[in-house]
Amino acid sequence: MQKIATQVFIVASVTFGILGILMVFMMPEKDADQTSFEKALFKCFLVTIFIILTSFALSVAGKYLNGNREK
Image 1 (cartoon, rainbow, N blue to C red):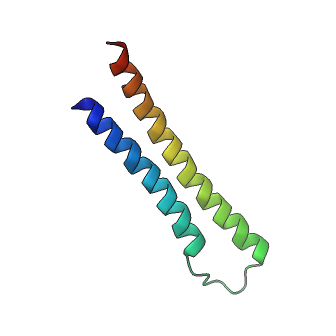
Image 2: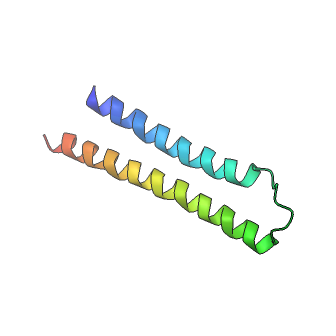
Image 3: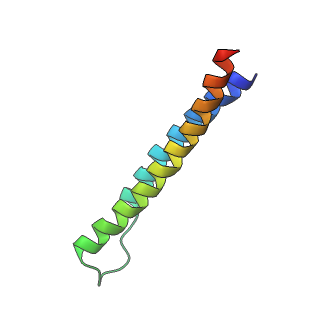
């Protein structure tokens, strides 16, 4: 049961990361006074947040999978 839950967690984490990155690139640009460089920088910042969260979740899930395989 733990292995199934961990695999579901991995799939959910990858989906979260992909949807988060897509959400960042699809968000409407409300601030007309920002330069295109500032907008791109802000989007890159948000993308890194989703990458960090996803990699952390996958790291934790990987530890659980490695622990269960050794037993």
